[in-house]
Length: 451
Ligand code: GLC
Image (cartoon, rainbow, N blue to C red; front, side, top):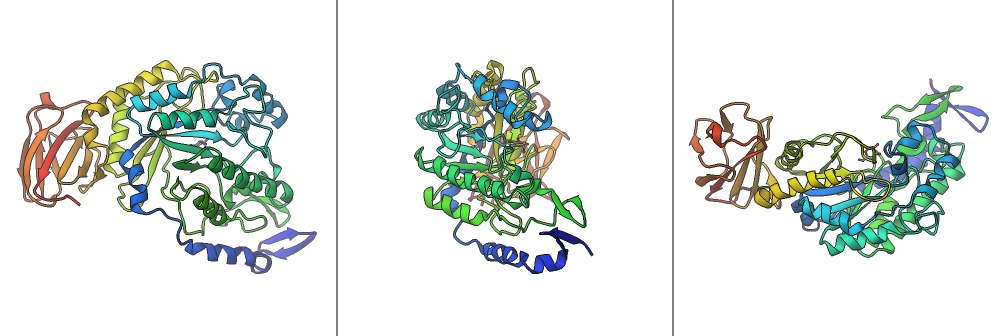
């Protein structure tokens, strides 16, 4: 039987969980119901209709140009790393330029890393000195960013990492309990600051919260040695993260804020307002809201000279998320001086130009009703279906039946199309010269609402 060393004595793992751990389980069970946290479909509508947002990873790690995990991967001492704050003087930072880049890309909201795992805040915090206001930059970038988003009519989103690598209690919460408690308190305090001092915030994007991140979701000591915790064996010791308490505080401060699923604890039955497939297109799902987050270049935080996605690849990624009924949060990592790479901005603008022409087939649509495939998929709004063909895997595209009768059909991207009813559904034919390399869009109008 496994055993856990605790206070000098060794107890069996089972009795440990049944004893002092019982309170922890009880609190998780109470949390399991988590009523009243979810937004209504009406509250979520703007976000679902928006479809496309900009993710920005930017902080003192940008100075190194090795991405936002540089400190971790290069094992940079916390005090050494902190010196980067003195080199972080972003002369070219212009929040309006960021917002313009997002708007020109056809994006409807933005999410900025207010604080990543290194603990450095891009905002004014009363509970930390490790902020852009109290170090060389002497600016509250979050304040400038929020103003710029609003002015540009974009939804305002903030990314916040509850975990913080400066706290030993993050790694070993059991023996550095005070530190773990302090890290937890910092999260509550800073989330409160972010949601109190900047007016209405539309999206809160957590990353790396919850009990399984205490102790890196990994290390625990029992049977006389260190073990990595089984993914199914959740952290139940002290301190507990109490995500529900956090969520409730957030709902009180910003009742309509849209929250993701990355501050929770397995066992608490509230997975945020949406979930977050990372670097992959989410599965077709019209019930549970989701947002794919992915990168324009290869890394999240700034790395110079990385190849970026082609225009075709960007559009196809957006189309694939839309036909599967999700959103796309596409990331750019601005330079340490605060400017976005001009070729990133140009690429995004190309996507925006495409959306100006074909946005009706993306914005405000729902995915389906026909399931997507390697060839593409379908979006719909009212009685209109937009068939997106991104890969002509065959000369014809066979769709399963759709509700109602087709009363009109035309191509948005070319001229000729042929639509036939078959025994199994609908067959679509587009002559090769009318097919598009990026996306061939066929509009089908039916005599009734699609869904
Ligand atoms: C990954 C990265 C993290 C980044 C996040 C965005 O989890 O490790 O640094 O912020 O993706 O989704």
